[in-house]
Amino acid sequence: MPCEIGAQAVAAVQNLPVRVMIYVGDKIYINPFSDRDFVVNYRVEGFHANKIVLDDIAGAIRARGLDVTKVYAIGEREDLDKALEIIRPLPGITITSSGTDNFEVMPAGVDKGAALIRLGELLGVAPSEMIAIGDSDNDAAMLRAVGMPVAMGNADPALKQLAKYVTADCDHDGVAQAIYHLFSEQGGGKYVLYDDPGGSGSMENDATGAAARL
Image (cartoon, rainbow, N blue to C red; front, side, top):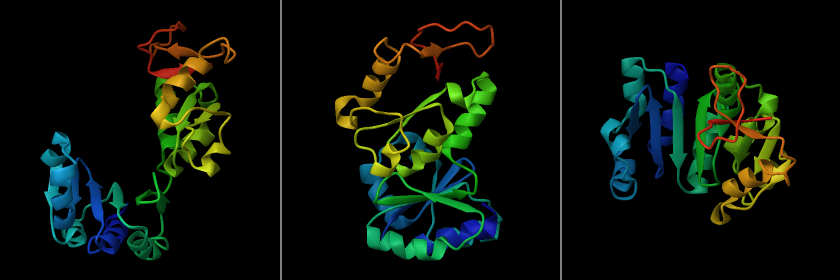
């Protein structure tokens, strides 16, 4: 997001009692409120190595002329809705979430579907040949983009409407069950794991494959 739009989105959340992650390049800006929680509950070495803790993140973004990659906030729904009232009218943004307790703000046109299409271009795999598995609103664009959209059993009802196949939930190995089904004769035997970015045309059931292909 351009500097000023990103700063406005950040300003809407940084003083609320919600945890924030503001992605700028290879750094993650957080406020002291977030840091107190993340130090205890989010013990990911790479995150803490790249975090920058500031009271006024929006001010720093403006002062340094920084473009913002993503604004992520997690907290109580009432607090999130207060922030979204300010953020929704901003131009050139996409708002999505992975649950009722969070939201993500990114530049317009940035989503998992666009990323998967780009990955397919690099691998020589058409979207119609792909399988994607999701469970939340931020997976919707990805499911719309592919030939075989799969929803987890615990997915939002709206997401299940986009799916051609609904698998088990996260607590019952839904991803594994979907793979076994779609790559088996029971699932039609139409899919193989694709491990040929060089384009030789070889398609084999190789567990090292990075993408699914018809």
